[in-house]
Amino acid sequence: MGEWTPELVEWVRACALGAGFDAAGVAAVSDDLRDGERFADWVDAGRAGEMEYLKRRDDEGVLLRSGVRVAMGWARSVVVCAINYNGDGPRSIEDAPSGTGWIARYAWSGRAAEDGMLLPSDYHDELLGRLRRVESALLERFGCETRCYVDTGPIVERAVAAKAGIGWIGKNTCVLNQRLGSWLLLAVIVTSVPVAEGASLEVAADRCGSCTRCIDACPTEALVAPHEMDASRCIAYLTIEKKGAIAEEFRESMGRQVFGCDICQDVCPWNRRAPVAVKQGMKTRRELVNPALEWLAEMDSAAFRRWFEGSPLERTRKKRLHRNVAIAMGNSGDAKFLPVLEAWQGGEDEVLAESARWAAGRIRKKDECGESDV
Image (cartoon, helix red, strand yellow):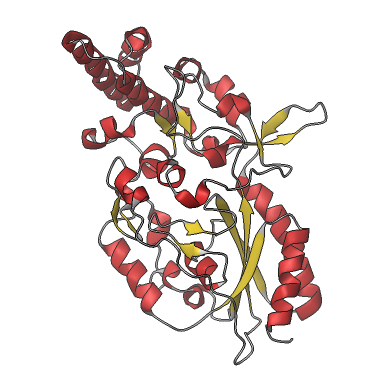
């Protein structure tokens, strides 16, 4: 079957680049328990919030994501591939038109149709298609056992990405690459190919230094320490994963974020010169950059499907998106949103109704106090 040597790592890296990835590497699967213990401590501290998939355990009670070989005893290495998703558009921290929201950069992606129109695309599908090409090359060369994952497997991708030399884990817990920045989506192939004894695989040095801009900029203080995030406080978690009502303590800090959050990456100095993604399937859908809150609020189920079916926003569903829009409207302080907020208060969705009441109250309070829009 063979073993991984530096020469073969270069070969698989070339395969990955040929398949449309921007970086690739190989990490050995070890029996070192430290990463698993850190992950277990993180879950036990409640920092995974309601993300139950991170809490799944085997029959012996061991967290599946605490180590690759917990779920796949045959695993000996992981091929890690990364693609740049830095869409062509402004940063979330830049001035934006009044009454607009923010959709996370990775969700802007679209794939060109025959008429040139950009249709919604989902990075899971875009990366998996490319990953299968790399897997085919591996199977032909090694005849090994493999499993492909894009955010779906029992593996902590960023941990193996760091060991594979893709980059280092920044203080914002994102993988940082010196050339590409942190606008990276990861895909992995778990393999049964061992790493040759004594083989030196590339590992990136941590270049965050004394910088704490990401920690200082996080509105909800989700970055509780360098390299440590409480996901239950993260705006990305709150707007995408969190079901039901969002705790009031976080609503004002959410600002105009309606799907995900890019703040900790937008302030990172390593992203100043990050290249713009130009690959098919990763083009920027301009309508999703600083979208008008009124436009999002007016969407019925049919319109939501038309704009977001097959995109990451499909996951959050219309009612959660509208919950987030209501909060963003409240944070805008703009009285023009009161009619739609009042209409939502009379609807059947209790979570949306309560969020709209909070938002309307916030707008009226600002108006009474004579405060300007935020």
